Image 1 (cartoon, helix red, strand yellow):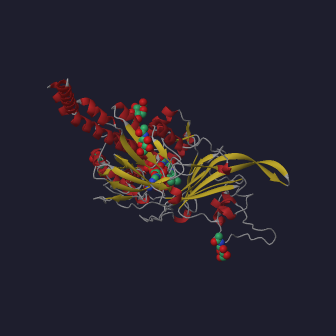
Image 2 (cartoon, rainbow, N blue to C red):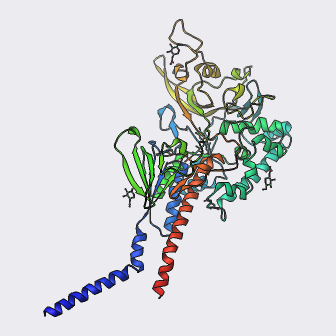
Image 3 (cartoon, rainbow, N blue to C red):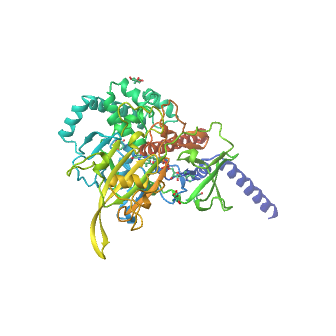
Length: 551
Ligand SMILES: Cc1cc2nc3c(=O)[nH]c(=O)nc-3n(C[C@H](O)[C@H](O)[C@H](O)COP(=O)(O)OP(=O)(O)OC[C@H]3O[C@@H](n4cnc5c(N)ncnc54)[C@H](O)[C@@H]3O)c2cc1C
Ligand SMILES: *[C@@H]1O[C@H](CO)[C@@H](O)[C@H](O)[C@H]1NC(C)=O
Ligand SMILES: *[C@@H]1O[C@H](CO)[C@@H](O)[C@H](O)[C@H]1NC(C)=O
Ligand SMILES: *[C@@H]1O[C@H](CO)[C@@H](O)[C@H](O)[C@H]1NC(C)=O
Ligand SMILES: *[C@@H]1O[C@H](CO)[C@@H](O)[C@H](O)[C@H]1NC(C)=O
């Protein structure tokens, strides 16, 4: 009995040993290891970060790789530079404070909007459309061109009358350039490690290498059309003149076909794709540190945005991290230090002033007189003939603002003489390199700067701003300073997508083309690269194993 029992124990132990050692070589155990989800941290819930999470979910599910994505966002909202504020603080009137428009060729945004069932509307949908001339191009002393919004033959006739065939040539040039760019969306170029290499491959490096004015000249676009129309567009879109901004971004400014926005705010796209990604979203949470560990993972330190000095911090381990916003503004320290640190890129500084008023833009401000005079609803600007500010980033010139647009009309109930009245108010947006003064706004609307009843002051003090104007004249306002996009100087290299093993970066694309769409594209791109590397890893593991099972 005793011997038998001992034999049985030996037998079981040996058996256990055998089963353990063979299990170690069998697939099931590997499957268990593989089943641990890939942990990805995404820093930033803007276009880039949200589309990275969305694509990770799609591709990892398709490849049967479990993935756990955590999005860190230091702001209290989704969308980054694409966000709305409510006019009159009323949720019925969300108004874009950042990126307002995307266009037909923006496949990532268009497709996601469709998939998510969002309400996509023509960009001018809410504009009052009351004036005959919807767009005027102001050079600081005159309107060099005015345009009716509809693409009526009259518009076209006026365009050809003044500019000859330049509009057609520009259209064709733009289509060729956009066609090259769209190759980045497809195999064999997508997904790409190096933006510089694929830009070269599609023939766009000589477009980014030359300033807009030189590029247009080389392509026989007339100086008049370039300065009056194309430059008005580079100024409203990027606050930059043609001698500064590179050829590619100048062409992007002319790709306006099918301009749309999302009802309620473009950020709804990013909210929708984050939800579809099933990522865990941590708002109000700033990442302060990324540490590469000896295991090859990354340790992410984050803190509540409201209390960055606090000792209260969270440390979590991830397999990979995506930095989805400009590194230079992220406040993140990386250790060990990167071998190559992305260059600090000069960014534009833009004042966005949203406000409402019962007044219309004063025609007199623009030197238009007579009782039928009307100012255009949208006023773009350019430099007057003969004034070349070259590559100076402070290039606004005599107009002093980049653009003023009438966004919509809202009927308000106001109390006058103790009685409620219905009054039409207009919501406006000014883009300018400096904060608009109260005097500028007052002049623009023909408002008297009256302060404090009798003996009132009619000239605003130099330091007065829009909030100092009476509420009866300016019924609501919101001011914001952005670093909206880089100063798009000509260049031929762009930041790589991988800063170090496991540390990915999307914002290199901003110096190439700076839009919501390109950030979304780059987010998808790094996600696709990451999933590809996981698949290679899986194949390497499974390859020799299969051989063993066959044996
Ligand atoms: C006024 C204005 C007008 C514009 N107009 C247009 C337009 O009409 N059409 C268009 O396509 N584009 C436009 N743009 C540009 C467009 O907004 C940007 O190109 C795009 O939104 C950038 O997206 P992103 O995800 O790359 O970066 P962001 O939107 O900047 O997102 C980065 C996110 O990362 C977060 N973050 C940064 N650091 C940390 C950290 N340490 N921890 C946690 N979170 C962090 C930020 O809070 C931010 O939410 C405009 C921009 C502005 C400001
Ligand atoms: C995903 O990762 C986060 C952050 O580490 C963690 O809190 C969460 O529990 C994980 N979820 C799953 C399903 O593993
Ligand atoms: C968008 O959808 C169209 C039509 O289904 C498809 O051909 C295209 O590849 C899609 N593009 C992207 C970037 O998803
Ligand atoms: C840029 O290079 C492409 C080919 O790579 C060529 O077709 C095109 O003409 C060049 N454009 C300019 C402006 O030099
Ligand atoms: C504006 O300037 C006046 C005097 O020049 C000063 O008294 C006042 O405090 C200033 N106001 C602001 C808001 O800076």
